[in-house]
Length: 158
Image 1: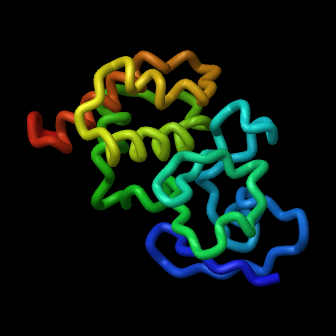
Image 2 (image 1 turned 120 degrees about the horizontal axis):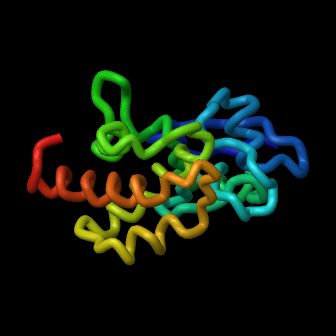
């Protein structure tokens, strides 16, 4: 069955067989590589996307749950020539090592900053809590999110 939704601001339609998850649709027919398969049980965060602006695990979410809604992935945050402030801050803070978890973390952090442009450390920790980083870069990631928030508020240069 065809499922239509908005993907990173652009209309998208995917032919979805019964049982297809949003993650499978994104990585398969839609050709995105940002959202990743980690655990398949909503426990690691590597598959996170936004659904109508709210972070959601896409590994168990049926693709039809996205019908008529807005889906956001890390590919929609910025471009190499115009990175999102979060992407620049993560690079500046050296907040990623292997990078496997980063797409989900960036999506969740962007959702946090959209609803709370001035989060404190506790709010950032809470927003990133569902994400596992086996490299142990969480403290640098928290610094990067706080840095991006300051840049987005105009309190510091990128």
